[in-house]
Length: 312
Image (cartoon, rainbow, N blue to C red; front, side):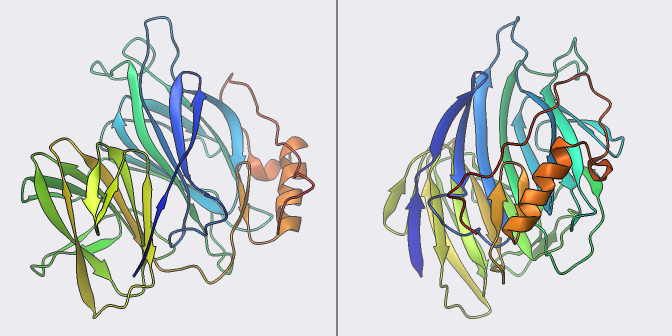
């Protein structure tokens, strides 16, 4: 088994710390997980608006938002309007091909601005993209998942955000989350100092994002905002790894079947060839109807051109 620890690219966007782990120094996705941002944690003063992401498009991907704290209002070009709250998943599918696409906005909401009465003036989330298989005709959609499988094992709380997971005991959990590739995603929260055994599936690539705290894995000490990436796993039908961490540590455990194609990413677009990205840039900036419209007064963002050195 080959193991890498990837360092994040750090940024501050409107007072929100962002740690980007994928894409990372030319590394390919983990399964179909092709983009990974850890947003926050951030606290907002009474005069601050929090996250404010204007109208922007996506192609050939699913956006996957896992909320840890705060509330975000999602609006999209299909007419969906939904507030995502703690321990919920929003999943938006952009569709595949040059006739498909979607646009949306994301903004923090508080009790006085459309959030729940319990909405905190904070934000903490893991935001991911899932590359869609380009050989399938996939339509646009949006799904909100308020109920996900959750269980406690050895003082560790686990929530299955997507996929199917087999415990070492043989018990199986399946999340309702829409999938077009075989993936798994588990939020792992250490309620006490503990060690947890996580089972692996043969043929999958895996990653572990340290969201809060730090952990020990395979003889390595890994800090918050670092991503462990491991593959080349020679397994029997079921195998496992052990992770030990202190109370309060929280990780995101991700896995999936390796993609059979290269994934290109630029701005908010995913494709498997440069020409399709160039066409999507033109279509978005010229208001092509494939991206629809969003019922929002937020600013419409402009797609930047591909840089001269963009590698296909």
